[in-house]
Length: 200
Image: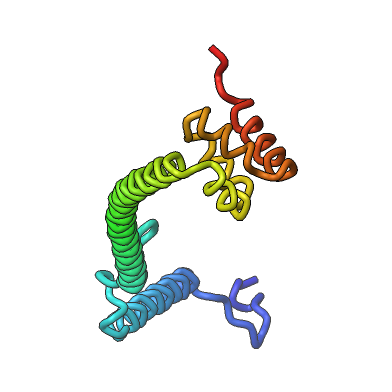
């Protein structure tokens, strides 16, 4: 029996080599699609804004322009604050130095005033001592009966001071002319003044 007669009607036998052509065509299509995708990515990269170029994009571990500007501004602010604080410290040091100078001048003025006052007091005491010495000499030259009424009118402390500077004989004569109570009060004051005096 012939092989052509054995084929069933309505069914064709595939030709050899046609499947390989389909595979090659599919690979061409796939390759073309990949090239189109690469071209699209390249077009997208070239269409990016100018401020996002590689020069301005921050790399890993690097600071972009905005961060650098912010850091520089912060450093400048800190520097200005330090300069301001240094100025305040300088002003305080100057104020303290000025206050110290004024205080030293006032102390010198006080020392000078104290020395002047001491001289004045010394002169006054010397003058008063001379005046008291004159009064003591005057009372000593008076008769005891004439001087006694004057001592009776004096404050006992004041009278005791005069009598202590008079010669003992004259002071005793004046004390004899005084009333006993007055003479006793003056004697107690004179004894109290001499109690603290050295005995040797």
